[in-house]
Length: 293
Image 1 (spheres, one colour):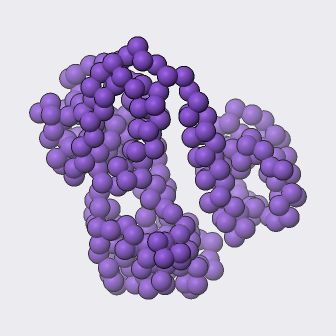
Image 2: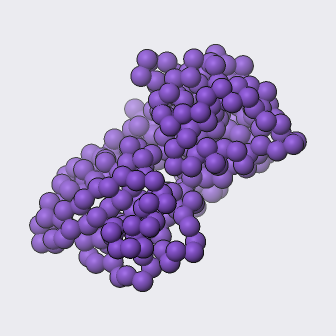
């Protein structure tokens, strides 16, 4: 039987791409990580990583296992948080703004645990585009905002704390020609129909990937609906480069979506909390920031 520690070690190696970097992040020896991965592969009867001169790369089996491993890690974390002690001594009212993507895929699970632990702290949730959230922070209409800090305006007197850097991968259907590759270039991607997500400025970010060298893909769909993009990708009619934050392997119709590493460097999607730099956070607000960390 695999242990939670092995799952943690495996995911650390996936994120770091190297045993040495993963060991450093985990604050354990390299041999501990190496032996853990070796034991996992023996128990599963499959190689999870390809050993390359520059580090490790997931095999197809490793990619499949990674999806389940992340679900296991998230479930374990949720179970741990569900039994934390309730603190009713701190009260407060927080106006928390959030963008659509983050309200759908990030905020509610965290807020559920926060409300359970701090029932006397009222958090009012307001969903709006980034520009509106920034203006509301400046004008004092919001206390905090859950935003993509990588997109945050730098000239409005706001400060922020980033707590998650999400990688972007190419999404493809299981039977798409590119699905057979472990890594693809932007030039390869440009040869296929493409779907653009028009949410939280993902469309603006997507347009920066392409140039004269890579070529421009044919845009088959532009949609504000992540499920529409996911369904089109799963049908094999288009591909898309999107953040791991919104990645789910299954569509509402039960079709599977795979994700593949892009050869060229793709900027991460940085998630964090922003607030007006001139104001000092109170205890309740600091607790909310800690909940998202």
